[in-house]
Image 1: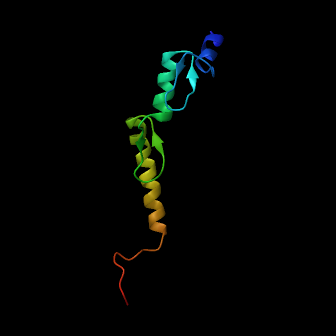
Image 2 (image 1 turned 30 degrees about the vertical axis):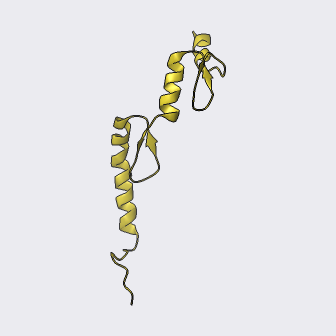
Image 3 (image 1 turned 180 degrees about the horizontal axis):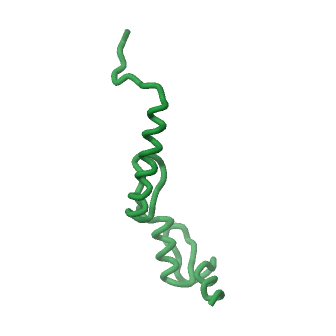
Amino acid sequence: MLHRHALLHAATGEHRCLQCERSYASKLALSVHVTEVHGPGYKCPHCDKVFDALIKKAHYLHKCTTAVAGRNSLESPTPDKVTGD
């Protein structure tokens, strides 16, 4: 069973990624690779973190927006407009 699982991560195989040329022993392993590495992803609007599933982004957003709000409250306020004084 472990040998079969190790084949999923093998560097050589007949299922080749068209974007980075890595190859996998099974079509499923290639599909997982494409989704996780090259998939469109769901980017957090507050930071550079990208998620492979919308639900993971939703769970993270609460933490990220709380951290951003806390950080913003500690920073000095910035003016809304730049004046030419």
